[in-house]
Length: 414
Image 1 (cartoon, rainbow, N blue to C red):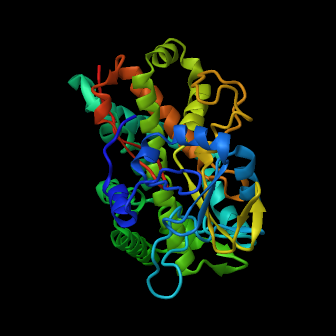
Image 2 (cartoon, rainbow, N blue to C red):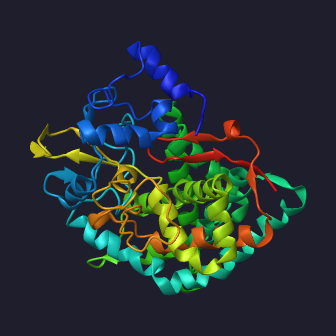
Image 3 (cartoon, rainbow, N blue to C red):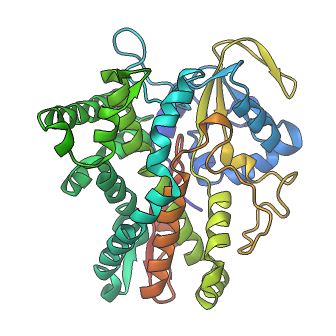
């Protein structure tokens, strides 16, 4: 993978005077070398220091071994989810600008906040969304199939999750470009321009505030059957959700399912374009789609999450202090040779694949069924209509990282 130094890493080098030369003791996850090829960094760390440390963005630790990451994910006594960003945004006013239950909640609040949302992402609900997703994917393929070339990320992958979650939330699909802009400003460009990211967060909250207000003028029985209405009519111990909880959960549902899933789809199509043997095998045997999707998720897990250390604790011999950040590098855990045979190889029919692309512990992604469905449908519909394809030029593929790693441009031809 290749990529040009982005403005975030350039700004950090200007501030510090140098790029990192020691990943174990001077970790910088925004270094473009790390974004382009974190796999080599993880391999080096495994042999010398399985918990990296850095202070470029505040004190932060990054365990890379599966068992260490899982232990932290399950330890809610010492590690809090109230600061899930891998790098903290500055605060405006008193306290955090955003709460996004349940992902930013700790027990006991997390338990009931998550329970409210689970029915909306149950297998039966996802089954109902499958034909809608298939229709959308076919329309997107229709728009490019006769061109003999396309950007598999911009023209295809980046549209599917946005429109699917818009349908589930009950907001206009015509607002897609605005949703995409928010995802880019918050999750892709947020570390380059923190103030712009904060502005985008406020815009999202204002948007959902307006949608909620619109529904309040509709009689209860006549409101649309969507996620916004569900949250409006939900209660906890007989009381309706507070406005901060309601809007924060809407924010989470929109943003959590956009960049993460389109990164997964884009990475999968990049893989097939650069590994013709896997593309040919999946075309020849479509029954491999389920194991192929799981292997895509393991190999190219897009999401890192943050945790805050609540009290001094040692992990793998490292003295973590209260207030420190822990970067939960789930993608690194999915390459751990202690848990996966030949971990850096894509094995399309891998039998044992207990990856945690969707996290681990109480915060395991509640939208995992939806993401799997979208990834499966996107690959199937693309392969059904697009002939054998390859990259136009590997140097034209660009990646961004930080909270979510994925390809932003994947020019292909067929």
